[in-house]
Length: 340
Image (cartoon, rainbow, N blue to C red; front, side):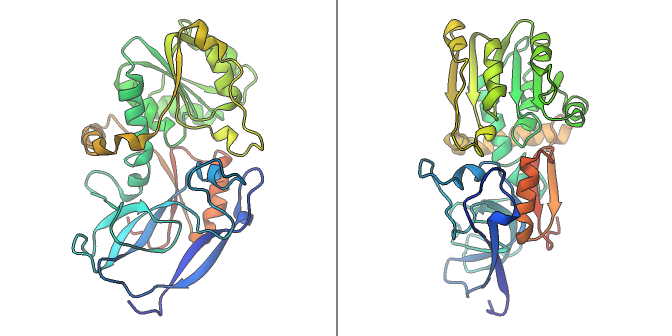
């Protein structure tokens, strides 16, 4: 590879305050070095924009994988192999991996995943057919296991994970209630994704609407947001219910994180609250995708995503849009050379 071509890489410029935006990031140009034996060069077509990035850019050493000012921003990319000195990967193959927010990425192949575009579009391998969808799949079918006649509440229902979790819960036969922000998203959840009820948390009477939607209480709370929405929802947890913690996006920007005050209902209803991390199921990703591919082909499962066109330097603006609720499904940055 000639050094004439340069790479664009995104770095954290400062510790964010509140909702992160363009001011918190900086783009640097760097030459693309000649590949060593065993390496391959990937041209990024899509960058995943994940809410959890805000958690690891906090000024705190309490969390794994912290990103400090001056560090390249962590993130997953999906793209095409354009050069290879690695016998396991051919030029022209599509792959995805956690290689940082950059235009070109060099890898030794470790941690890379091949993307079969006949199963799902390239961008979806970072979203509904990727970690977001797999999180929802195993959380629903292995951790919650809803049955027909049961009711599940999904907080953050229009996000990358929530938009998939609701569909899986419906496929399992459960009644699905979603909480999201705005009437348009509520309509989308019901009309497009098959939610039974969608509630706008921005409305003052949102909790009363939830009470009316779950007269027999909630068998499951699938939580992606934490904060007041989770706290209020706990008052409706049912006997032996499960509260599954998949994310706490409302707390990522808070100076002092706070847990739920209504935990007493867990004891009263003999319910439990538990954490969930999808990487515990890495050995079963193939099994999940095989089942998901059948549902996609039959039209029973959709892969919602919101792709914003831009370059590496636009990541900060897209990240801010994510936190302001602009997305329906997975938020992606689609880079200029993306041909898929």
